[in-house]
Length: 310
Image (spheres, one colour):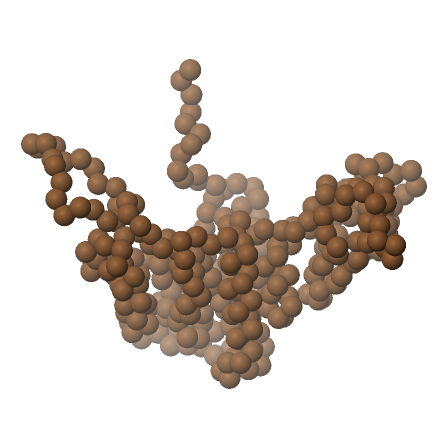
């Protein structure tokens, strides 16, 4: 049958209801707290504006894949018919990097592929290093990340818990962030080694449960509690170091300044590449040095604040 192609590479979801709501909350958050962040002047030569109260460092994280585009030195072509060349051919390397409002770019790592655990390891190392940087003393930290699964992966779900003692229980304890951004812990097993029922866990969370409550209704009651909300492993890790994580709205790459870094870096590499993997690995640090030398990050952060305020 003749039908719509559902496997298109891009999807325009900017005006989806949940995306619009997230975008409005995202913009409102930064507009209300602009005085706490390092912003950029509108002069011909941009300069930093220093915050006066509770200064906050904005950290912008993302990953990107670099493809070397390896091809043979020569190829067969038909007269007046040159086949399309796929720039995605050849070996590639995935790079994880961080752009911040104080010192341009910080390299986090590079590999063939990053999963949730490797990303968590990188962030843990970063969070541990921040406290040793003298320039960051007496500063708060806020980190922007996108909504990829490597960032949003959660540990537990209500459906993973049983209704009777000793039945299924996915974790030994539930850790969550309360309304004061502090980590709290609920043990999932009693002193005899049996897993607690969902009702007991709900009572420990101070969730009111009416008598003769059925399982489906019982699952709905604690679903709005912070312990069972979709809190990612990354958010829990950041809370241990008193760092706030904010996810950028889906389909809105302009809300993360580091996207401009990838653009500049890959533009530099395209200009100097000879389409070999070895050359790619040498051009990547060169592109970063060029980015820092030209102070492109000043323009990226100025555009970020212009976007949020508009």
